Amino acid sequence: ELLKLSKLEICVWATTFALTVFVDLTVAVEAGMVFSVLVFIRKVTSTTIVAEVTQEYVHEGRSHTLQNRHIPPYVAVFRIDGPFLFGGTDKVEGIIERLSDLPEVLILRLRNMTAIDSTGLQALEELADAAHRSSRHLLLCGARPQPSQLMHQAEFERHVGKNNICSHIEDALARAAELHDPIRASDLFTPENLIPQP
Image (cartoon, rainbow, N blue to C red):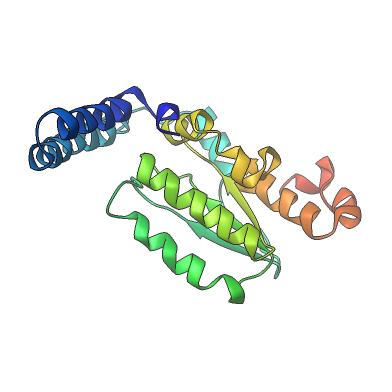
């Protein structure tokens, strides 16, 4: 599992392990914390973007917006905003604790999640496994390049299924309808019905 992470995170784990074995546990923990902070800073700064707003960007954003979209009663939509790194992953516990009261399909929007690390990935895996145990479906949508790449490296689709990782909310709602009622979904989500009405 560790070898599926980014090279920086593998180096942190390997260095901490080596220091624990060959030097001292206290030194290893201190070094591990320092390296983790440096990796954290690099992840946050590398996900900062300064770019011109183009027509393509505006057009792409339409498929991610929830405005004028109907959220059916069998769907609950959650979102993660900002970096999902160590220290913030306990917030997923709130969803897990509420699973028995939630509908059959959960959509987790990652559009505004700028970065993720191994602990964040583990938290999402725990959420996916808990949803599966409670006979619910977890869909992910809108992941940015860094989170998407790390989830792919770690083979995250094993926990939710490849078809349940969607590119945007439009696809996620269509997939939710398919999971809820496969026969009716084929009629509702035709290309004509997916075009926003004026």
